[in-house]
Image 1 (cartoon, rainbow, N blue to C red):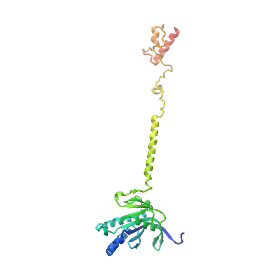
Image 2: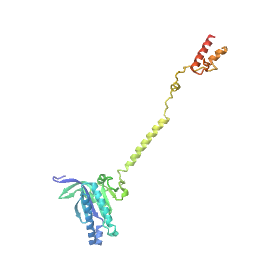
Image 3: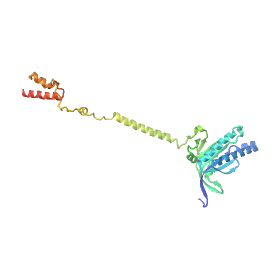
Length: 288
């Protein structure tokens, strides 16, 4: 139940903590404190440089807020890269490494502090990060996308203390060669299979259309006379062959007329002259 007078807002929360701080202080309390103090000053400077605000320090932990998830993750990346440089000259067991969690959500603002589940989730994300690493929530990933020179790896849906739902967790990959990549995201695994299915469907359609076109019924070829475009259409009745329809008692002159010798000396091959000669021959036969 929401009480009256509570001030709420949307904020990106960064929570940072030193990994193995108890062991470091046990080995060298004063040296660890000096080193931690210098690191906290460096972290604060980077936060302010990205427009964030440090809410408070709690021993070795830092809580900060940002108006943008993109700037919050950019700040976390710069913090880890800066601290990695600072640790290069230290022996392995004296290196101070921070783990960082970044979350985006609705928070309660009271006495210049932030409260609520969104702050708690940021702290749980920090605990899941590796020393020198960053973990973010899915909400943060959706906002950041490919805007930064880092990649991301899906860690899994994690059940954490005092949060009543699993949290989808992503690790930030600081190596530049992984920039823009999201590895193992269950939401993105379906994309390639959908593309393959669509491509397979398109190929199947093309194959079917090609098969129908190649093996399907052919259109009838047009008549020869319509293709040649003859100026003088041939008669429907075929031209007479020389071995048929020639009476035995026909004179030689009439025989020559019947087989197709026209007035120009051409032969009866279905031309106009041949047709005329054929007509004359038939008339002679009838008269005889």
